[in-house]
Length: 357
Ligand SMILES: C[S@@+](CC[C@H](N)C(=O)[O-])C[C@H]1O[C@@H](n2cnc3c(N)ncnc32)[C@H](O)[C@@H]1O
Image (cartoon, rainbow, N blue to C red; front, side):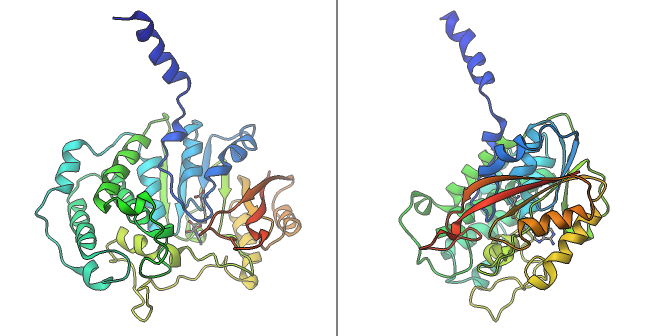
């Protein structure tokens, strides 16, 4: 045996190992995945051990803080986001083993035809809906909360990968551009996603928590730092997460906790009121949010083509904190993302990170 090989392999792989690269990426609207270095570079010198990612979305920011050794809590009003955070942030040990995966995939399984009947002809083929029904039934038989989270998050990822542009705001497949992702079966996507979520699981020695619900209802949280990345409000684009992701959001509870609006063509879940989607409510929403977390360091992401403006945000933060700093980053949104407009420069924005202490 070549002794050089034995010595070199672990040294290279451990030295360059980047836990963040294990995070299962998604095309989540407003995801800060490409801004993680910017966020960390501007928070790393602050004194904090615990952090609340108050609007966790894809979960990548909370996960990034976990890779930096912090104790992380996450919150989001979407069950889908909470499920990703439960699988990757709160969960430090459990994975779905080969045998369990085989059990999940094995036939026969009890299916009730609910997805096939409700969404017939809208997003996927009949056998794909049947697969979703089958897996959701099998998942309900798993005995571990975290294994369930991994399996559901992976199933949602499979649906998003299999869907042109990854959203459910339209029916049919008019944006099918022949991408390889659209040629793989939903089962193949599911198996790939389970292995990605498994690989993302790690322990940083700290305790983590996942919350699900409106941030204004969260019981007071005593995290040292609160990262705030709400839906960006602008007069030119909508920031309705539920409209884009209603199918996977419904899937997470098998539509048991979701009321479908049957009058809509997309069979989306009934709209939930949010204070971040109108000029009348958004200022007070930020003011209340900053008041709620005034004991913590606040790190707030927002963009240059949204309301409140940079100056207004500084003013709002100064009502609650003594020192406010703003860092800026030039960013371009991709299609399907918030603030994107074809044919103009509206998708080039400055991303702000306000740090208030
Ligand atoms: C800009 S995204 C967060 C993106 C996330 N930081 C990431 O990197 O993926 C905003 C998130 O806020 C959530 N949200 C909207 N209104 C909320 C509310 N009232 N309470 C909690 N979460 C809310 C949305 O579901 C969405 O996931």
